[in-house]
Length: 455
Image (tube, rainbow, N blue to C red):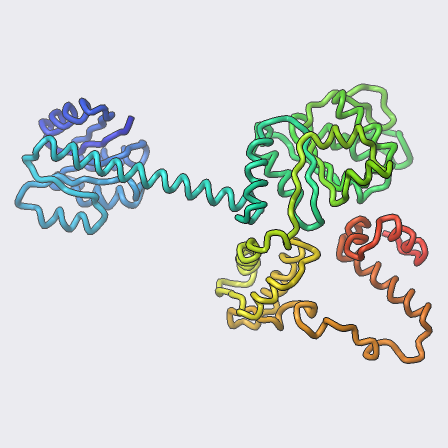
């Protein structure tokens, strides 16, 4: 039921209009002066304001101005006598929907109100649809309107309401954790904790302690009881990032927890029960890992009740412009209020680059470009990393390796430096560094031992 606020200093008009419009099914609120009406507009929820033009105290024009400041989309219809039509026209210039003259025809008034409310309904519906579209294009920090991303949004909407385990796969840097957060914060657990852990960044012993907690004295250095991530995520969501890197012994323990939702802390005997939704992610081909025997099949199917595959940036190039503009705006705020745009050559470079690091790499490139841009408001190719220009297409060996350099020692020296650089850029996450270098995690671990690289 739509609510109409009627304002007139003449009580007879309030009674007549209240009865007339009330019989049309509207909820009627009345006021004899503009000051009271302004409070109603401020604090209440009205769908239309019908006000007299001339009133003592606050005039109808002043009430109109107040209404347009507080609730600009609510339609306002002015009532005026023949002698003040010019003022009514002025009111329409200030935002009034229409005006009627006293005495008025009942049908004319009802028709005018009907049209005004219909227009208001359309405005609200358009706003709702625009907001829904905006939410679709941007789930928190997820940016994209390409077909693959819209399909992911649909899937997130559906799975968010359930408790089923979700496995999110896709290349590094595609935003798998953002998808996990979207599932959590769009579901019934959104007011409870979202706890994450990277299973590829910890040793087996540390990972077990982080997942399940430990009791005081459970091992050297355990000076106090510590709750694990499962306990911290009780009634919420636990995000297991890089779950494919989990050591086999821990896979057995994880399977039992997922089946029973109970566990014991390391060094403890008390059984702890929890209610946790598990969302996991991996950049590996988990089915191949199952076939190879490096990942338990029963655990894989327990985690993979619902599968979401996040595409690489190369598979959704139509999102590049949205992403670039989003990150420019994000980092522009740190650098001032000047507007920053890409030159046509820079846009061409962005679209032709393969983006092996996906959205994460794109964000880093944009941040760098915003910092290095010359200040004229334009990002050019020269503001981008060397690999975006033809200068880096060939490796100039003569430029940095002496002619007499021994082959094996030189290759090993370069290999060590590449591994150290990859680890540094990947925050010492071996799985990510290995992927960046195009090798396996076991091989990078072998090379780290060879070159005495510790993290």
